[in-house]
Length: 420
Image (tube, rainbow, N blue to C red; front, side, top):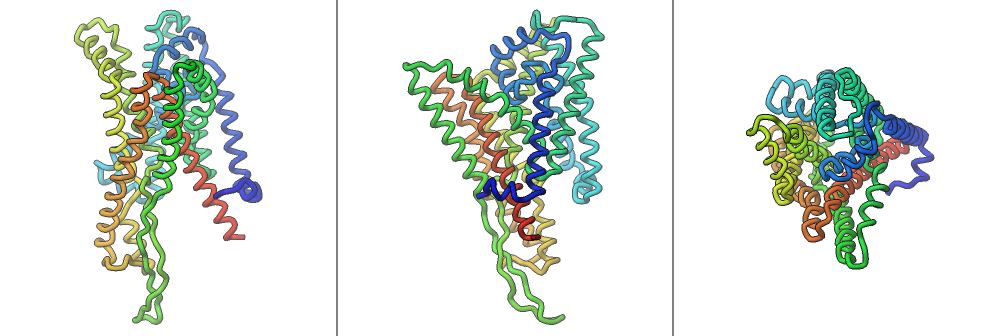
């Protein structure tokens, strides 16, 4: 277990953490700089009365409720990342680029460029939606809208830049940590609103709420810590023609290789149909208005929402693992270093074996992670408390991000202690 004294004694790690905390302060300062032309009190009332946008507001740390310059957060960047990762799975040339450092840098640059138009479209859609709500947008002119779109787009680019600066410090994934910071910032007000509804007659609801939180924490920790150790043996060379038995070690395969990203991806996608449908609920064309209304009704059904959420988390566990885990490269590196898995021939058979093992453990890891993700929905069904969806999902992301950051910090400390 990592200790505060070890972190503080390691100069590079200490400086990295302080730098990241400083960026968090910059982010929270920007979160309180509002876009001009919006009645924030009317906007706050709108978010409190809408569960969907209340969820978005919690993830943004209250930036949407304040309609700040960073109101959209890193959502457009996540969407751009998903697009390029899907393209890499369908386009062999793009997949080959991911294998080289220069190719990955170019794809990252394309992701940044795609983020800009996506952020502009999302900002325009958000403003159109708020204009439908009376009293929120004070100035209905075209130039105030253009200015607001530019400001919100620049805010997303700024958030993307902060996330990349955090990732360079190797104390966690920058994008995940930015989402984490937003949730933490909005957590006190959320807990105050949630606990305010309880009274003595609702003690059972409160107990179920606490049990769900504890099970979520335990479940996320178990999924993130579980791993399968694959034995690996390295031959020891005696001369040019002879090898003797060498070091026996293991290759750890995590049950949940994707970390918290399946949750973030799933939430980004599951909210998209409802958000877009909100734009057309007052459309002049009847069939468009009917489709938009029906879409909102479908996703308002907690059973349908829960099933789709479960399937998305489960599916993205496989998808993101396929992006970051490459059995062919691991088998190739093992063969170059003189390593092999006992009983498995080097090369292609090793890659096939690693793929088979990872698929088996990933099924249980993805299923368990998806089950933990919908646990708040299950508790909500018995408690009739809509805040459970927001609180459970937020806690899921918080715990997973903390575990991921601790592991990266521990790796840095071990490396520095070894070098010393």
